[in-house]
Structure formats: structure tokens, C-alpha cells
Amino acid sequence: MAQISVNNLTFCYEGSYDNIFENVSFTVDTDWKLGFIGRNGKGKTTFLKLLLGKYEYKGTITASTAFDYFPYEIKAEYMELPAIDFVWDLKTGCEQWRIICELGKLNLDAEVLYRPFCTLSFGEQTKLLLAVLFSGENDFLLIDEPTSHLDGEARETVKEYLKGKKGFILVSHDRDFLDACVDHVLAFNRQSIEVQAGNFSSWWENKRRRDIHAQAENEKHKKEIAKLKKAARQTRQWADKNERTKIGFDPVKEPERCIATRAYIGAKTKKMQSRVGQMERRLEREIEEKEGLLQDIEEAASLKIMPLVHYKNTLVSADRFGLRYKTAKEALFDGLTFEVSQGERVFLNGGNGCGKSSLIRAVLHNASQARDGKVSYDMIESGTLRMASGLVISYISQDTSFLKGSIKVFCKTRNLKESLFLAILRRLDMDRSQFGKEMQDFSEGQKKKVLIAASLLTSAHLYIWDEPLNYIDVISRMQVEELLLMYKPTMLVAEHDVRFRENIATKIVDFPS
Image (cartoon, rainbow, N blue to C red; front, side, top):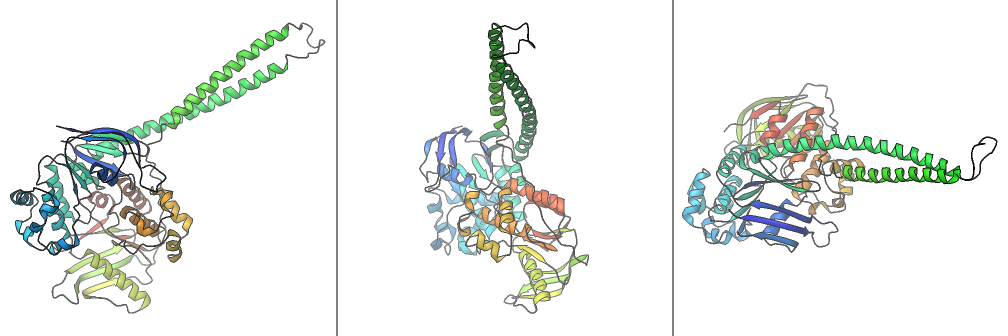
């Protein structure tokens, strides 16, 4: 067993004013299954790149092991080639028989090595690259969000696969996945970094208890500070009043007083002033202790949503509904029957390619057609799909590539109040320094937060979200959960996060296998 030791690590990107890491120190063992947790923008992927030596930094990172990183970068010229032709470029020295063994553990046939890489599904590509990653020896593996865009079945396969492995750092925002795959947690909190044995749920419970204790201590300190301030103010007033009596007195009113009394009053005043000084020093200590209490608390500020109420109870109704592309002979799916009624949160469940996003497109198309007349459409429908008339929809797309330009222009185009929009982004822990950037320069997680914020600000009868949580951090996911449970908007959702679906869904529509 070896260790990776990080000491006084400080790093910031060129041109940035703020350090991503500042004097960070911790140690991890290389046989751990380490889950990496933190808000978007806290530097998780950056830290993995630092381990790989991609950037210069201050401080030291000491390790007696080599590192390898997932996902591999697949060059454009490799896409038309079978993976067997370029796996050595991805991982030097990996042997074919080892890759085949790992593919078997991932329920994948060895023939995927010999098919053009571009013909493989996203799930097949992910599993193949994981098999290559684990086909070496003695590397400490850096696995960055392996479940993005994977369907439920593929996630389960990868989850079971990683449960049998060790010696890796796993970056994931999927709570169910983290709970199953890790035995230690590396958490990037707001102001500190901690390493803890256990999985996400045990870490979160411990953090919740610490936060409750810190908040209670904070309240106690606030009361103590108020008392000290009041006592110090009164004592100072008494000392000042007493000091003013040193010089000058009325012999009629104070016949027993003489000039010698002045020294006694001065000594008494000095004691009072000394007491004030002691109180102020104690006050400073209390304030200093209080300031450190809440530095790592994830406040998870509450969000708001403004759903509209439709005069009809049933907003979407499908009866033996099916879809196929005009250029295809076979249907994507057929015979789907379901309803979306007001207050329901309906989740679409099925593997990649089963037609969830196509169904969402059909709903959007039919709503648009009912409102605006005939709209071009590349799908052929069977059965019936009915939409309530006058339906207002708020939509989050899987795709974020269209996000370009400034936030100001984005808000103006969508008729959103910019101040409220920025306030929601701040509550989703998006740093103010990002607001001046062009949106095409945002990370994928930040782009998703832009779409979520826009949807939350849009009053609608029906909220249609297509994989809204890809790249979104765990804390933000829980904020969104709390919001949806509080306001109960009517929703049609495609999302592979099992824990999110379990907590939010009131109905699940299963697609034919």
C-alpha cells in the first residue's frame, strides 16, 4: 500500500485572480476506492489534471505510483478505426487478453474491439474505455464522471464493475453510484478539504450533524457576544461617568468629600476600564471562534418556482402511441399509453435509444402545433397523443451547445429578469466571477445551471426536463429536489439519476425493451 501526499498545494489558472487551491494538504492511500465530492467549480477535475502533471503549481504532490485518467481523449482520426488499432496509444503496454477479460466483467463481447469506434453506442464506448483503463497494473486510476449520459442498465453494469475494483478516485454526482462504489470520501468543502472513511451517505450524515452542531454553537456565541457587548457598554459608561467626578464637586451636596477623594475615584475608574478591556478581549475571542463555525456549511439556499394552473386536469394523454423516423422502417417504440395530470411528476424510464427524447420532441411538437399551426417534423406518429389547449411549457434540453454570448443577452432574449436570474445562479453556488464570461466558456455543469435557472424563472403549466442533472453537483441536485417537493409542479422528466427519480417521481412510464 502506497500513499499520495499533498502538501501546501496552491494553484490558480493563468489570468485568474482567485486561487482554486490555497495551501491544501491531505493524504490518501492508493488501495482506497475514493469518492471525490464537491460543488461545480471547486476544482475536482483540475485536481486530477494536477496529479497527471498537466499544470504547474506551488507546493508538493508526492506519489510512488503512476496515474491514468478516464475518459481518454479519442482523436478524430481514431473514430473510424476499430479500438484494437489504437488502444496502445491510449494505455501503453496494455494487453489484448486483459482488455477482453475486463470486457467480460462489463457484460460486453470482445467483438466491440474490432468494430469502428464511431459505430459503438455511448454505453459501449464507455465500457470499452473502462476496460482499457483497468487492463494495466499498479496504476492509480482517476475516473471522471463515468456515468454521464449512461442509461440505467449501463449504470448498473458499471456500478457492479467498480464495486469489485480498488485503487481509484471516482468523481461522480450520482449518490446511488457513489454509495455503491467507494469506501472513502475526499470532500472539497467551501473552505476546507476533508478525507473520511465511508461512502457519500455516511459522509453527508456526518456533515449534517456537524453543521447542526456548528449552527447551535454559532447561536450560543451570538448570544454570548450580545451579553458581552451590553456589559462592556454599561461598564464603560460607568467608568466614564465616574471619571468625570474626579474634578470639581459641590461642598454643600458632598460635605464629606475632600481633594484626596480624587485618587480613590481614579483607582476605581482604572479598575472599571481594565474590566472593559478584559471584556473586549473576550469579545474578540468569541467573535473569532464564531467566524470559523459556519465556513463549511452548505446552506443549500431555497429556490422558487412559479407553476401555472391549467383549467384542465389532464395536460398530456398518450394512447397506444408510437414513433418512428421518416427514414427508418422500424419504430422507436410503439403502444405507449400514459397520462400527465396536474401535480404529477412523470419520469420516463428506459435505455439509451429507446425513444425518451423523441417522445419529448413529439410532446413539444404537438404543443407547438396546437398553438402555432403546422410545424416541420421528421417523425411519423401512430396511435394518439393529445395535449391540453393553450399549454405553456418550460423546457430543459440535453443539449447545451446553443448557449453562447453573455448572460445579459440570454436573459433579454428569453424575457427573464436578469437580477432574479443571477440570484438563482448564486443560490446554485455559481460564483459571481463567472457572470462576466461568455456562456460558451462555461463548464458543462455551469451551462446546465443556466438552463435550470431559466426554467425555474419561467411560469408554466408543464415543465419538461430532458436529463437536466448531467454534470450538476450533488448539493445542487438536492436543492432542486427540495424545490420540486415543495412546489409540486407538473413535470415530464427523463433522468437517469436513480436517487433523484426515487425521491421525486409520482409516476414512472416504462418504455418497451
